[in-house]
Image (cartoon, rainbow, N blue to C red):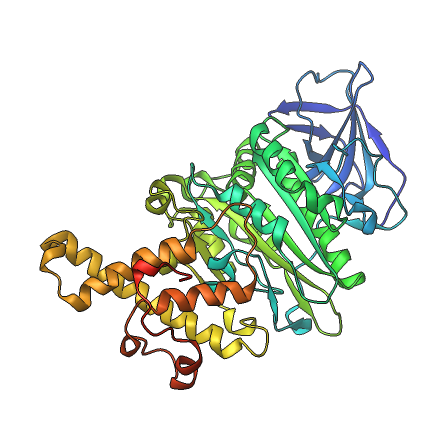
Length: 468
């Protein structure tokens, strides 16, 4: 849409939820920015959701409480919603609409971008490559995050998914290249927002982090804007400024619920679980903004965090997310109950692009072989544990009992990690080999003899601990 002078109307005919209907409009486009002025003089902001002939449906960010049909003036601004982009965002903490929460001034400038964005053209996409190291062993070691990848975290209410997301955002690094993190929180409680701000404080002062916080008591429709603002800023930092940018978005389930409520207010026919039929394309319009572009040095990598109602992985939000993204990290309620953090479920988690980012050159083969071996051992340990539930531990053979010792060493020596503990990739691999060495050398069938010769720890057992 090309810009034009604002056009103002006083023909509001309906107010429903966060929406108002304006009739008699001309030259108004979808996604156009709107200013709504109440009879009292208060100014609110919105965006056009739909236009049908001379009728426009406007979504008001601050809500419609206090609005009346008479005396309300609606000014259509002639352009889609835009935001200033640039490195001046780094180090800032803002609301879900970009209003500063850190006491600093508004981020201003002449370089404006439409927040709608576009998915990267497949013809220009470069293959994701090289890792983003998170300092979390289960991610770096078993589900490596690759620059340009979309790797979601699947969780349920009550699990520490926000703590893990904040830890990853606080610790993530790339080697020898410019890097930044954009953290977008959606629908979180005020307590969680405060905890995340505290956890990310050190990184914020280093001027390579942008934080957007949309809390549960903020306007619902603001939640729909938040990830788009975050991704617009990330794209500029990546593809114009040459940075590798990690975008963490939590909680995407809250985002989808906002989309559902707005769709319901518009009277749209619901699809699965009451969500609109276009939820897949809506999510894809966000997720497909991650990637790398031929000829440009930067990248946008995404970690969407979502909660699965009732632990139902077939729920529309995780189901559709799984179709679009390249793997998932699944958190386990059972591990959380047993005090394991992060409660990473290895047999339900994977990074489909891990081979493109494993290791750092010299350790690539070592890393891939270790990962495959740990997955195989965990799978066998899970089968033995299920058998022990039926026949009892005493009925297991000596070889089977070894797998129970491995499972304990794996959880306590490799998975278990402090919420503020940063591990290097070398430490992660060392811990992995220490745990694998609990098993007899002959049991490590996924590892080459050359790797075993340099890495296997003879005589290691579960009683020695993972780093013994």
